[in-house]
Length: 348
Image 1: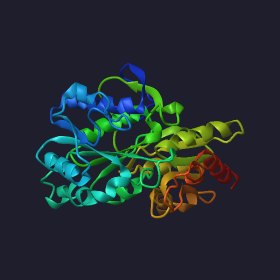
Image 2: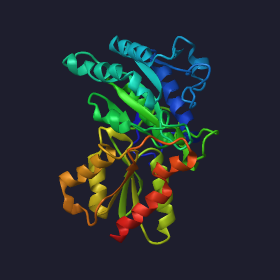
Image 3: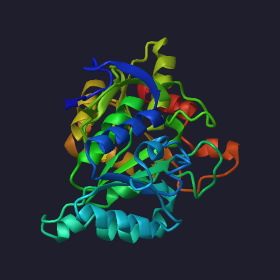
């Protein structure tokens, strides 16, 4: 198996251009072919192929015994997945929206996340909980949150959030092979779906064959020397757009794609900030008690004198995400806000 630390590195296999959703499905299919204990279950994951194309073609390839449509009962089917994992299977369980975690949190936090600890390490739970996150398409307050900070705050689960097709495949492979729970959160805006706003980077080169992206390892999405932007998921794309926009003015932006929240690659954050002396944190999750504060604390705990200027912290305000398009865009961390934060950091 090849380990790929960054998608930008020369691929050991031939590659082709895939959407993020197709890359994710390819990883699942390859693991299902390799390991008969891997199976997939959730709402609309069979004939429909997942409402965000997260399982397209899997039913036809593997049949209804391994690609299982469930009733609308998240507590029941997540519990089913936990039980199967404890007995040695490797289930991938799809929670259609991260917003729905409220109806099944007991299964997630009191069972999936804790069994390994409560058994003194004797029982493993090799399970992937995959879920769609993010706004930007007017789907209302109950379908548009990211909530990765909530999952990351609860110990016992790894949390990964890919931003690119190559990472979507490699992180899914790592998640399936992990011997304990991994929460795999994919932003709808990076999936390359034709009915959503197109993002040019949601279609990119993906190596063929078997490779894994290590969980807990960030990547430098763009090297720079003037200011560090730490972010993840769709906001990586926005940050890269901003970096390209301001480069002509001599502002050199480094973009760090976290890829994993748990474990958090603090070394990558500190290495970049030590170089630039300026930090912008961009997070589509809520500002209070969230990831953006954790990133800032990472620097402050290590050496606050690394910073030449105050941190610019851009995250969701603590309000339900509006349905109206204009109001939704007013609260999301879009390019204009990121550019303003970058300029403020550089101006000092």
